[in-house]
Image 1 (cartoon, rainbow, N blue to C red):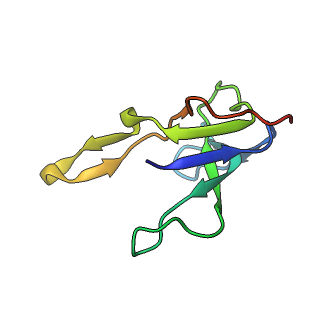
Image 2: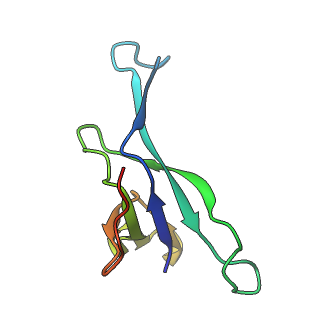
Length: 100
């Protein structure tokens, strides 16, 4: 299970020109978080790793708290390869919420 901590409801909203279609620029909305990962031996890493969580166009930022990766974010793609799709987070059950 991948554990993610969101520590702030602030997010970055960037617009980048689209050279192939100037009328439709690219929009990137990302919220900062921390991923609690495992080392190559399968042990929890000592410190979480800063990461960016993508947000959909009109999606509200995630509230402060702990989350896990939603199972809908993982799918089997071409050639039966396991792949990560759109990142979605679900609140961790029983996790204490911190104040923003």
